[in-house]
Amino acid sequence: MDKKQINEIMEETCFESLAYCCSLEKNCPFRDSVLKKLGLTKKDFVALKEKFNNNLYDLIKMKGGKNGK
Image (cartoon, rainbow, N blue to C red; front, side):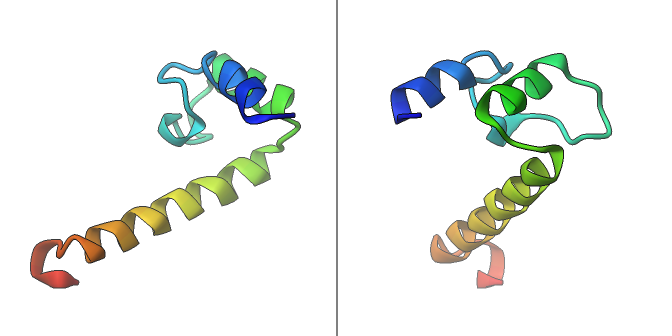
């Protein structure tokens, strides 16, 4: 699957990216459909969201976020 195909599948989510999808506590047929089409499990999704979150922390630190912490 190439980047264009992945982007087309991601467009099916509310905000066109799994990065912005709700956690698994909320039922979401759009997120679940995209995960299935991408061949990802819910466990994969949680791991990806953790990576997104860690990357966000790193970016905030690089930008000198509040007190650089």
